[in-house]
Length: 172
Image (cartoon, rainbow, N blue to C red):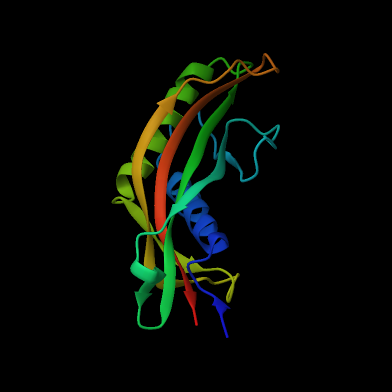
């Protein structure tokens, strides 16, 4: 019988989001930045600005294992994705540019501090207290890209894209 492995897409996305939330919450911030809110499903940006948003964008998979055999008891493929990490601020704040630049720095710092990736945790079996698995999602690059002007003239955004990959496994 085949079972969904701890390296499922759900666990990977939850592990990535949890890492960045914890990293941002744990950083020292200047007084112009309150504890930001977090949005996990774009474009549901909250009215509570400043805010960070996370969106995972699957981009494909690669067959890198002969016969898809990863080891004796698992089969797998390499999954690829892009994480959209965005910082959002309100132009109503007199410090909006400073907030935006500082939040961009927070994203870059969290990316650096990740050491190139995060351990995948099992949220499926134990959602309240996820346990670490023996597997990891790897971050490849962080790229800052320009964004279109928001339809709401009050909102300003910085967007960083992180390429990531991991081996999705199937136990049988």
